Amino acid sequence: MTDKATITIASSGQAQINGPMTLDTVAALYHQAQDGPAFSSVDLCGVSHVDSSGLALLLEWQSRARKQQQHLHIENPPDDLVSLARLSEATELLSMVARSGQQAASATTTPAMPHANADMAPPHTNTH
Image (tube, rainbow, N blue to C red; front, top):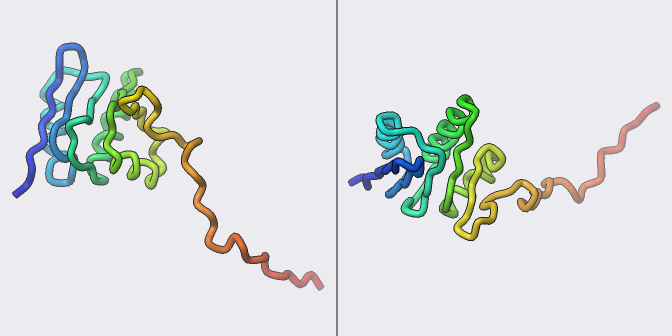
């Protein structure tokens, strides 16, 4: 059985999502949002799980907002969304704000992954 996800959009432009944002639910969320009023922020405090499909939906909404010279604020992102955004190098594409008001994900705070061969010397090149 698939958990149902819903989006509620207030007249203030605040959207609230409840349930999982996964492959099984993003199509319904997309269509619910298309049928509703425009929104400038989306609160994810009621989201139970996010997979790459949920990330893709948020990126789509962000892209649409930018095409209209607007900005979509993503509030209270769950940890799995923050991790996926970092892994996908999409943190700068999303404007995520944690409950404390601090940026939820930032490229400047993400530690660089060490190169697997960082301790190896470069191969000797014979120039003769």
